[in-house]
Amino acid sequence: DRWNADADCIVTTLHSLDGHGRWDVLSPSPFQIDTTQWAPIETYNAHDGRTGSVRVIHTPNHRGYKGTEFVIEAVRRLREEGLAVELDLLEGVQNSEVRTRMRQADILAEQFICPMYALSGIEGMATGLAVMANTADPGNQVFRRYSFLEECPVLGTSVENLVPHLRRLVTDPALRRTLGMAGRQYVEKYHSFEAGRALFGAIHASLDSRPERSSTCRCRSTYWKTKPTSRLRHCRPIC
Image 1 (cartoon, rainbow, N blue to C red):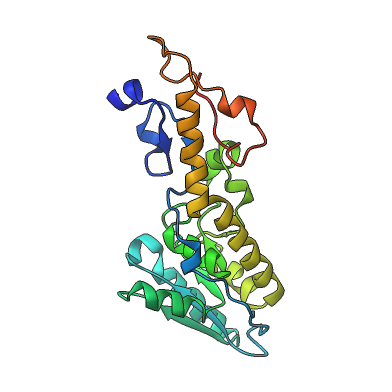
Image 2 (image 1 turned 120 degrees about the horizontal axis):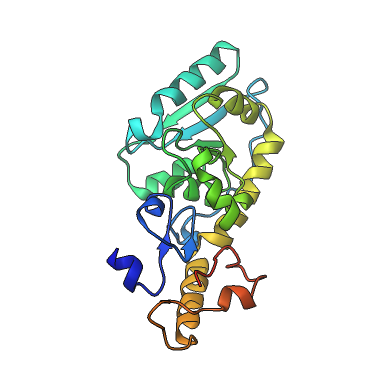
């Protein structure tokens, strides 16, 4: 309650959305990364599981949270169908190894229990991989209405449709390339250091230019109203 009453600006994400009485900036994920450390792949694998193998990478820091058992089962079922699918379970390795092995993969199967994409999904998109994650969960709808999730090229996937969605990506190299290239652009726009500077620079500028706060209103910013075409158009005023 004190945060809601005294904060000049509340930036919130999926995990804190329900705990606040209000929000001023809503983001699907709070992470920004150094995109120079995650160079996009330059040559895409043209195999479709029949002409050659397709590699899926999964990064389960917490298997139950990520839905690892369902990823393993989905790969097993596709192999039974005769598709050549490799699975790289990436656990307990250094960041440098993560970058190397992501560049050797074609698909990132990120998380399917917890809604939304997370840091690994951002890194996968920055690498140019086709990414699957639970972005289609109904609880994410607010991020499509008031934030930028509608632009996200992650293939929204649940436990229930993991097998057909993975099959679609394995057998369609053109789609993998399209999603991978769009993912890199998405990360540069919303999850790079430059995006973070734009966001917090806009917040500071908005607060610095506001009139004196009244007893009933903590934020009088008109920034979001006066610049609707800004890259921060997903933000909304609370007053």
